[in-house]
Image (cartoon, rainbow, N blue to C red):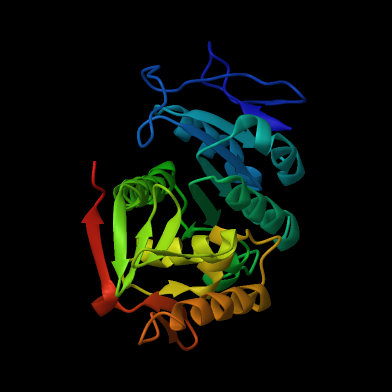
Length: 271
C-alpha cells in the first residue's frame, strides 16, 4: 500500500498495487536539487500528512504504507531520496535503508522518534546518510535532502576534475584517463581493486577516508569486509614501497587511511 496524491484532489488515499504519477507544486520537471523523486515508508500515521506536504513542492512523491512494499518498488522508481521511519521496527527499516544506499540513492534519511527507541548511531549504522529528529516536517526533510544532494554534486565535480588529471605521488605518475601507474617510464601493475583504492584515496586529496567508506565505495557493503580491505591495502603498499622511499599510504588508527599530502600533486594531462 502507498499513499498516492490524486491529480484532481488534495486528499490522500491508500492505493493497492497502483502507480499514480504526480508532480507537485507548479508542475515543474524534476531537477537534481529542486524537483526529484522521493520515496518514503515506515511513517505510520505521519505518512499521509508527509505525503501531502511533500507533494506541494516540485517533487514526485511516493509514500508507502509498508516498508516491504517500498523495498519491492525501489529499483523501479529509482528515487534520489528515500525517507524511512521505524514504525515497523528496525529490521525492515534497515533493509530499506541499506538497499537504498547500495542502489545509489543520494539522500537516504531516517526519521527518529521516541517510540521506536532507535537513536542516531543505530540509524546511521543501518544505512542512513543522515537523520531527521522530531518534530518531523517536510521542510526538515527537504533541507537535509538539499544538503546531501549538493554535497554529492560537489563530489562528482571534484571527481571529474581529478579524472582529467595526472596525479604525481613522489616518483610515481598515475594517469587516470588511461588507468596507468608509471614509475618514471616503467609501468606498475595493479589489480583493479588496488587501482580503485589508490584513486579513492587520491580523490580525498590527503584527507582521511574511513575504512567503512572505502569498503562501501570499492566493494559495496554486501561484498566488502575489513579483512578484504586490509589485504588490498597491504598488497598496494607492498607494490608502492618497492618503488618509493616513503610509505605513501598512512594509517589513521581507528579511522581509516589517507595519502601523505606532501607526496601529492596534480598536473593537467597533456593534449
